[in-house]
Amino acid sequence: MALRRLAVLIALVVLTACSSAPTSSPTASTQPTRSPAASETGSVAPTSTASPQVTTYLVRSGDTLYSIAQAWGTTVEQLQTWNAERYPSLATDPGTVQVGWELIVAGNPNITPRPTATASPSASGCRAGNRVAAGNQQTFAAIPSAGHAVGLTLDMGGRLDPAIEILNFLIANQVCVTLFPTGAMAQTAQGKAVMAIIRAHPELFEIGNHTMHHCDLVKGGGGSPTSAPCVTSGTPTADFIRKELTDSAAILKQYSGQDPAPYWRPPYGSINDAVRAAAASVGYTKTFLWDVDTIDWKPISDGGPTAEQIASKVISRSVDGSVVLMHLGGYETLDALKIMVPGLRERGFLLTSLSDMLH
Image (tube, rainbow, N blue to C red):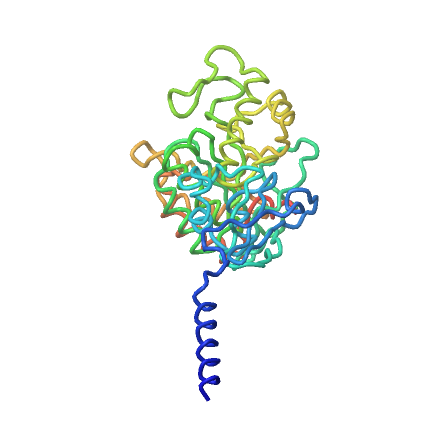
């Protein structure tokens, strides 16, 4: 009996020692080791590795933090939280993501990316972002082949009130539009807020290039802000035109997550064959003008139209394939849209993007 008690006592001591031994499982902050396949693969599908805690993804050319968030079913803000300690610049600017960075994309292991969605329709049936190929140079004032559709377009080249309210109205009413920002306005504090909303809603908002400084590319002059380095004597050169487009594109890509090419709109609608050729030489082959001008940039105090006048003009003059010119900083634009959108829909028009109209 004594021997049996001694054996039980020894067994209990051994079990206690085993249960108190430290485990080898990593902590939540442990970074997984990237497998060779993650850096060597040429596959189009996102490449990931997993550890007992997280799933990671190796950033490739063309990726934005928004597109990565979409693919992995998370948010830009969550990606920033997960990765800012390793890549501090992400904390303040999601546009700094770089090819080759290994990002945590899920808080659990073995997560797979979502299927890529291309030009998904909004609740109203419109689509945005399915850009046509660059192809040959074309200039559009309207798109008659679009069917019973109207393209509402908004320039962003100067005043930016009430841009946020306008975008929120369009989101609430599921209206697809094409926006033409300048690089100079897109990099202002208010412009970055606008770009963030565009980035968050690619199903509704697509962008085209409106140049860097809103200069008149035919006659010279113009510009926004007033300190813009526009040509004031003589005709802008082809190199100047190209630089205006490429400088702007870099900023628009950074903050909106979209490449504006091949869409662009010349400031003031000022265009000729030389300007078209210069723009096409850097990939901007689709030049968009308009057939309905709201003149919403002019305040009522200077003889500009009221919201009712703007809405009445657009509703009555729009035809199949019309392209309507408005501005994110238009004085009466927000109130006009509140009348215009239901009015055009009552006429049976689909309010959609220029990309959707071109397909």
